[in-house]
Length: 235
Image (cartoon, rainbow, N blue to C red; front, side, top):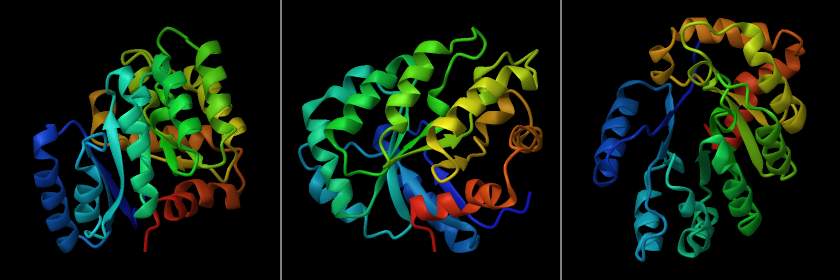
């Protein structure tokens, strides 16, 4: 694939090391011009979050924050929800990375702070191996009703059977998200390097292209480029 722009999304750095991670990725961006955004860990529920976020946002590569599969209580924490409003002040977004059983809490968060731009990562991580669908689908519909919520088409391979997944296993989940969010609010995601636990990035990209073969040329351009440019406010 011809990759022109990259958004780096944090992946399990220790909380106390997130600024070091930002500094490292920023140094890479100075060498590789296609790195145009960073979604970083940030403890937004902390008492000094307003000033710390102001300082962080001075780095123009920062496009948003993410918390990776935190305890379910985080998304109902009053301080966390209240402080999400600081994101809007700096034009930043929030990547939602939760397990499927946590999606109702994500819905609660979105309803409490409706003015933030949200990106649901990995389709909300449905348990494809166990063919979980009904409850996941209901939560997806609830999230998709909010026009400020986008969904990242990624992470399907890691939720499927790593030894025996088939294209047909992925289709219902891919199709459901596309139908609920529409072509203007879905974004291709590589899930690299995590995807390599199961298969290669090129295999995932080929799988994505097969799943999206009914997209029009315009829709595919939106999903592969335009929607991410708009959501993450890329150059």
